Length: 487
Image 1 (cartoon, one colour):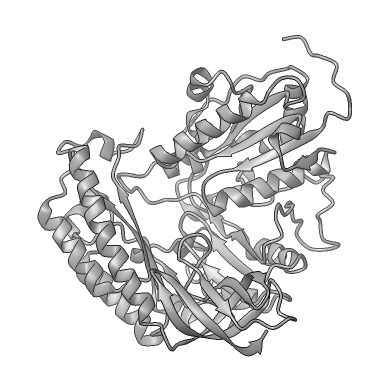
Image 2: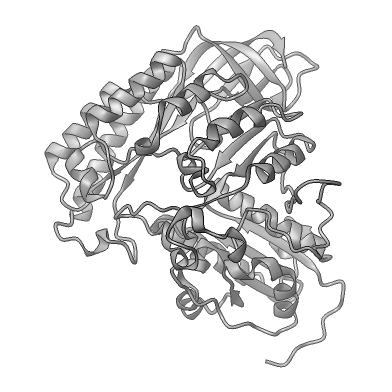
């Protein structure tokens, strides 16, 4: 296609982020790269020259949401609207050329390898030079099989803040590792990537194919970005990855997380550290101790159980089971009775029997988790489970999901009710006169409910951490009255 002459002022981009907190970090890295090259970030797609949609490709509902968002942005093209709509992120990386063929409304489908040069790619696309769509490949093949032999610098890893030596980013600190990130909101909470990729081979999960093998960020890079976030008003860091319990294995230290977490609590401005995405099979006593005894670290355990039946778990290519999981929960609560524990479970995995579901239900009753995500199984392209026989009928999966969801709703409401009378430390996220909303240590952003606050003073503000007594509950949400202590 012949290039069109585009005014130099046509450099406004709207970034739309879908999916998980890891995608939020990726978008903030893309924002820094674009802004460093002269792009103006705008909130509304209708006022942009280009719309960059950071898609999610995890499950069917997320894929549909991504496609609907791309189509909605494409509908705005025309007089006064965006010149180009570009798909990036997991859906684009996973499907590439297939997505481009199925969605001609998108002007380009770019992969992770395009991220370092995104500003130039976007300039060309707005000018009419449309690139060939990304060709997917199994990103696990890009790095050595042995974790300690991996050269992270040899591949593009979104969200790790990799910057070329000639980067014009204005977000580099005066000394130490460079931070390639630009905040897209003013929340006192921010995700921070510990690592990317996964070496596990769960039969139902396609993430390792498009996110690649597990790669830890170096501790100095993580601490530098934490400092950068603390300087910009962040009070709570949510450490994210595909598998946080593996952190350090490729750096030659399986206990590196136990060293890094206390160091992060010393960063100026940061008052709470929250660790997410923990594999039950990789939990260890030293990590439990660090999470439950270190001041400034939330006693919070995001444990990916997925099921409780050992039969189903083995078919999933996972470890553990009812007894092992209950023992792990008991070990956590023996150290910290108030610890928050959440998980996700999958219903309707191929071969799942009614006895398996009953075992899961019994586990949930005994476990008394604070929050549980309940999902119905669906085949994912390129996964082992997609080839399995003994598929469960969709109507039966839906029935099991509804049944377990109802049980979970009752159990988590009871767990929240048990906290009435407890004193909690709440990070204030909104203020309305003498009332507000925030989250206690057992409540992660978006997924675990929140705490409504009464009795805020006039000098209380977003970002404060207040001590409050729980007076009531509504489902997983808490009501609390501020005691007067502020941090």
